[in-house]
Length: 141
Image 1 (tube, rainbow, N blue to C red):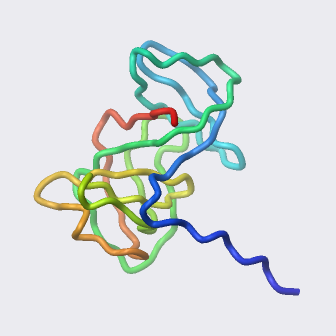
Image 2: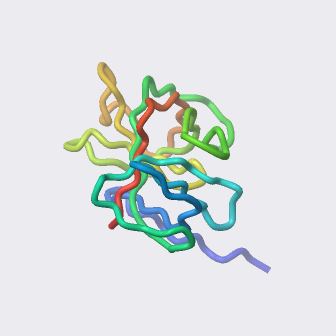
């Protein structure tokens, strides 16, 4: 029996993530990602309105201190509970004009590499690993 074909990912589409709000605080939410143990603590805007248990869809954005291309490895966000500090995954697309690299690290994340690196330095399919600057955010779509 053959495996079903994977749905292709549009490399130019901004990656979204769906989850359930596990906690709400002043300026942050804790997002529980279905099918995983992830409970990501993410910054939200002051206009964000959400309640514990509510299902939300949005974009996780992070800034990478330095993105290293690696030969192999798994996909993950560390730690599983709390503020994202380290991410490793495969480049699934990006937007050079916005300096964004889209990374599948379990959940998909939009990453801004900090200078001197730029989004154009990375290619589709590369495995990357990086530390995350404090302030990874969630924006509803």
